[in-house]
Length: 624
Image (cartoon, rainbow, N blue to C red; front, side):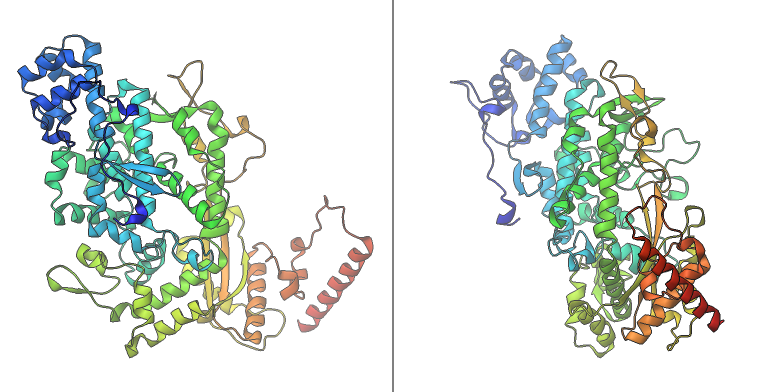
């Protein structure tokens, strides 16, 4: 930890945490696990529960057994009244929910964050510290200078919000029987959910690995599980986990299931298999709502999104329209069918639509920015060229490349955004071409933007066709002659899928709400009950086209081929189509239908435009 995180000294008992009465001694040790029976009794006196001292003495209940203490244990010890047992359990739970020796981080998004000592122990490992050197938004930093934040602070923020939500549910609904193990496991899952990210975040598993290891289906969540296991074993944290009351291997399974989902048949990992009663092993059905906190596979409403919405908007300079604090206030677990889900008040449905609208805005303005995307393509290109020539040592001294480092967590721990500088400043002659590409990125000599189009909703491009699009554009022969012949290698086509996180589905249909009059009964709210101005469709494709050549003749030819390709495929007209290919756009009649609602045009201008269009049609016929 460095001073920037403002980690504070151990806290003493403060008035708002229940300061001791005059003349009452505090426990001699700040770590409750080191307390003997008399220290526990001092704690009970300090909390106004001194009448149970003798019962604790008789049962020899010391600090190390407090995390495992249940109502049944207290009843056996002689606490006969249910209310007293609940009061004791709530009091004892404060030891790990708000531990005395917690550390404080000063975060620009969430303010002062208290982190449990176990979480701090995980943070202080090489595997977690690696996240300091992986940009949260990858190549977007080359477009938005403020987007310099890393996976490190995002992961801490997610752990904080996960704790906030699970503790809010615990305090609001004691009948859920959320215990300290549940709280710690949820926070650890939030902290470690992004351990598997590679250089430049999603660029690595979204672009680089599919190009270098085509037969491998791999996502960063897979590496997060493997890296988490490596973190625990290589740092000897099993004993530490046990000392804080976790049960192994049950709780480790629970943590990993929160990150990746349930294990299905054949050890495959994914969604709930059809026909399976309960796919999870870490927690039973009655605690299934805990799986909706860090990575919600049901509706997509989870604390991971809450943090990156707030954090990314802050660093990008984009307004965040979603207020997760309100969700925390209204979150409640309700029964839906045979399962329990996290629900919210009916009046919050508009705010949830705002959340998904914020997601869409971030993708349009930042994550899928046309310049950020081509920079990502160029960095990927350089990494692919450098892959066979970069050596990374792993376990037992075995050497790995960039693409094979994912097979060994010791090697993968060393793989960060630093690979950019490693290639850029290398003197190896075999890295010359990769160095040239990265130098072009720094000097802003980027591949040139040609244009963007969209297919109709019913004619979206399937993933199997993605690799053929450059060939299709290069094969197009516009009706006007071209001075330059371009090949498929001269084009880069990027297909962007825009949605609300669930393809063509409305994610709000997966959410259940409760009303003020009956908070235990859930309802479903249809889109037409919210507003008539909400989206009719929830998914679309954007097709972005670039050209590697930069001379004027090549760019002119590329733009004409692109416009002709859009005509042939019946895609939307590129925004600058009338400017870059005015002789082609009149050939497609539905591209030239004027908007009947428009009343701000000049009749003389319309007449001139019509004459110009007729002239272009005549010119096109002459070439035919």
